[in-house]
Amino acid sequence: MALKDGWVSRYLEMTKKSEALFRRAVQSIPGGVNYPLRYLAPHPLYASRAEGCYFWDVDGNRYVDFWMGHFALIMGHAYRKVVDAAKEQLELAAHLGLEHEWEIMLAEQVKKMVRSVEQIRFANSGTEANMYAVRAVRTYTGRKEIGKLEGCWHGGYDALHKAVSYPFDAPSSAGLPEEVTGLTVVLPFNDVDGAVKIIRSRRLAAVFVELVPSQGAFHPADAEFVKALREVCDETGTLLVFDEVITGFRLSPGGAQELYRVYPDLTIFGKILGGGFMPMGAFGGRSEIMKCLDPTRYTKPSERSFHGGTYAGNPLAARCGYTLLRELESGEIQERLNRLGEYARRKIRGAVERSGLKAYVTGVGSLLGLQFTPSPPRSPRDTLSGMDKELAEALYYYMLVNGVYYISPHVPHFGLSAPHTEEHVDRLAELVEDFGRIVSRERVH
Image 1 (cartoon, one colour):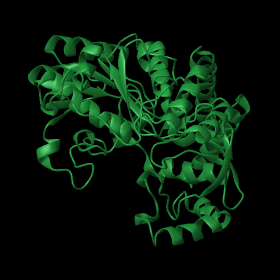
Image 2 (cartoon, one colour):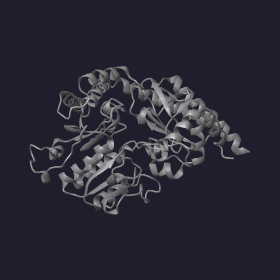
Image 3 (tube, rainbow, N blue to C red):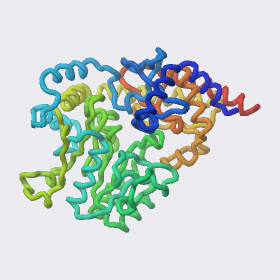
Image 4 (cartoon, rainbow, N blue to C red):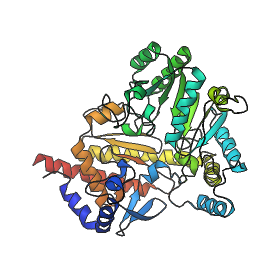
């Protein structure tokens, strides 16, 4: 009997309506889900409503949410100021297919908060923003190859959907032609010598990197590594692109780059940018690069990098994003959440030590992870290759039946939001400690 089996049985007992919805979903939706990440055996959890840092499933069970809409909901579910802005804009114009002032206001607000951004273009998701950024860096540099760090996630676009799943030398999806992925060069994460050597040996248009990879349970890039990337990119004429879809506006008003004091040529945004719940992405950076998208400067389509979209920069998403960024501009919310994150890491480390659980606590700011690896991990490779899958899955179901939700049964990682308190963190740490004691008893027997 697997360690998780008793908790899986309890999950089945408490989620009968979710089970029924899943049986219905698979008749119309492949696999019953619209994102494989959300699939959970024997069936996914179906939510009915959410408020603050809680959500309720269709069976009426309440959960403390540490997933928070893919970490987009920094102010929590149903944050009143953004909800009110959305309601008002719905009455005025949710979608026009025209230019409007809200997109200008949002662009100006991003520039105000993120010092590396001089110009910006809006898209509908982080994936889409990464896709258009790849085209832009190729246009600007005249080079074809793209560099990316292994284990970093940049969405489902073909050119960047490589070295995502472990083992990193296997395709990360079917339907990815070698003619496309062959132009993507994979670099080791947190390995200065290895990454620098590869970058110097190629003519890369850009290097794309997540500074705090979610697949590494939020173990951040070393400061030395980030600085080395900036220096070697400058040396080789390679653009440096930071994917701050998760970290942007969350770790500080200026994102993770402000904490490192290392600034990219382009930055990718998403999640928080759309107010937390409106689909929105963006890419922005140096004007010199962004001008390659300018139709007034390059009138021939063959001369400029195309970007566009039916809903790109729509007034509803732009107004929601602007409203939220104004709330985050001072940095007070991020500072409080970062302190809460430090408190959480201390509490969970203590729980791990007292219970005898073999695990390492990782993360930065309001993002944290718990890693069941044989030694302290430094990269997504360490996490994904060394994770004790039995423990990770068992913890997931144990948390679930005790009213705590996070997304991955494979890599435990958590995001804090404004409604979370020390009491929520204490409960999380208490459950980790209880789980550790259960594991110790079970594995001894």
